[in-house]
Image (cartoon, rainbow, N blue to C red; front, side):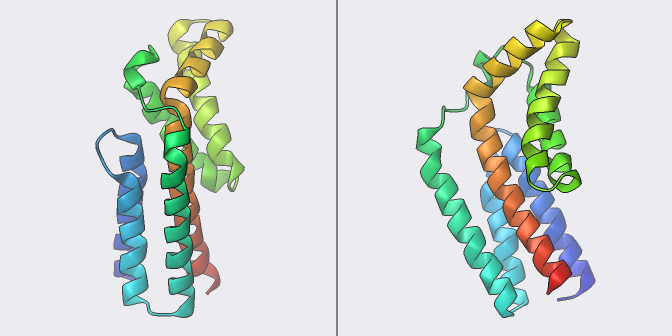
Length: 160
């Protein structure tokens, strides 16, 4: 697979990660489709192992969805901008502090954004808890699953 094709696959994965944060966009399916595209063009055992792992992870994520609270962003009282900032911080955090940085970045950015918006630490904390209950956990779990897939793909590119 050529370098430009890998760049396009990476951009499609990035689009899928942003899609997880955007209501109505099937971000998880976009990330999985990008891995499928890569595995079908790079027919190595590593590519197929990443595809199998991605498929299993995405299926587990789908099985967990009914156990999580449904996404109801309007009920949290926080603007959608807060969730977007949290999601972007989670994506960046995943690569800055591998794996755990996604959770720290996501929740930390939501708290920081809400603290700035509301003017106090207590109000920011209460708002972050409300956001996490109404939509945050569902978004975080789906985003984390997609980030693990993207991380696996990058790992396969670097070490294979």
